[in-house]
Image 1 (cartoon, one colour):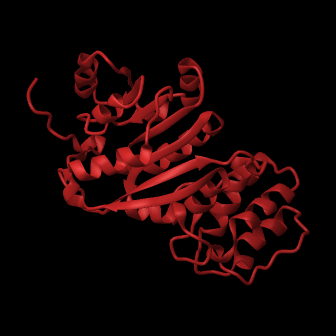
Image 2 (tube, one colour; image 1 turned 120 degrees about the vertical axis):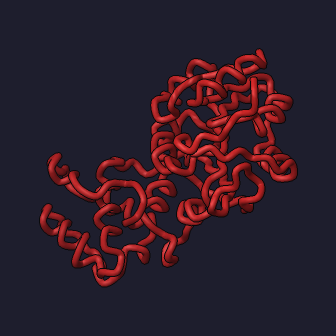
Length: 269
């Protein structure tokens, strides 16, 4: 086969810097017997060194040409699919136990992938991803910072998140227009028992108008739905800790379906 041309519609940027690849592999630190799943293996920059250090490796690749190349190796379990259509919990069951998920995620759909994986969190040991640095900054942000938003709250509810290191654009071919970063996500053993839909609605409302005090947004919505607890509405959304959003979600009475329509759980407005 000839050289593969990066396809813009798939958000393809192939990692080529060997020092960065080595550092990522050290961060993943695969061990024999572990069940590794790589999202978006591309030309195999991470795939080959990973496979050398583990007993088996499953890869999820949408590009049919790249999937065909990967199958030709003969030592990979290739799932040719849109990652958003893969049932990772079922994949873990097929592989015989909890999985470790790694990869250089397509930046144009990174948030949907992260939320899609939340459903499989109980069957995941950890996740190590290359993402746009700005996204990693938001994932790991602390309350009070400008980066703290919907993504921070929703993901920190389910994961311990560690920003490992940054990666410059020249580590890729073609180079992206943004800086990248490596993040580790470890699912929490006992996350707060909240409804993802309810928490997502609360956080969506809170961050829909970041410059306003919460009494004008979330406070108003809570009052409309019969909530009578105490809530400091003089703060802005980024000043409220994750734990307080979780406590609020758990204290709400049952809500009608129409109350959950509106701002979702994705990126901030």
